[in-house]
Image (tube, rainbow, N blue to C red; front, side, top):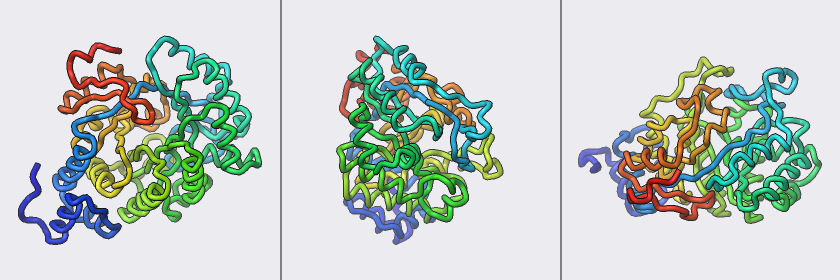
Length: 377
């Protein structure tokens, strides 16, 4: 798609700046949100994506373990967790139960287990260290991406250890990388309304900074489409961009769409598909030091995730294998999120992109860009 000849002078200057590979400011990012068309930001984001990754779209073979949905916190947007005081509908898995879930994938070519869940008082640092050791003892090559900064903050405070000491113990037990959850929106006034009792922005950033300094890569998320403003989104992304300038430890940025089913924010309307795609595109333009941009298909829906591949996205996560309840319980597009490798490859090919299987750290494992490589499940 070409940029229209007749656009506002401020937008023309922005287009030239982005095409020259220059960083845009917060005020210029706001101009994109307020004035730029979907076609314009989509074109720029796609150019950036193709300049970096050509026609490649990445995915991996992974599965999720959710140790519990019982949680001491009460986030307004959450339809997943059950408060610790009212946990009749909750689940609490033992180390043996979770190890059994890992063993179900014996002989299958999965490369990553993703472990996140509620914050349970009895699931402490010692408990999770035992879990990681058990997984690594059974399958040493399986990459363990585990626990959000919210879980770490509670875990380490309860154990009375520093972030560095807590992470050191978990790395020794088998932790390989950190997911990006729990970031929500960093702006204090918004955080106070939607997740007042969980770790704040500085705490989240400190945990990820410390992880990066210890050689532990991580991802970053942003919950969008609720009561936040454009300025709040930009503030959130700026803090991530600043930290990435310092550490280069983030692999990917993952915008997470707010869903309003069965939570305390059901009165808030969800963002439209056009708004979703604009957010992805502008994130790709603004976060110039993030190597990858991921649309998480279980939350966005597979067709919408496919569409996002034209708006700067180069990763649609993995096979999942129906092992996550976090988003289906919140009313996401995918009520039973599972895709085989062949289905993911087909989804990417339909968008006229080249499917590339990666490991968690974006090392290429299989190139499915030619039909001859498509018959692996």
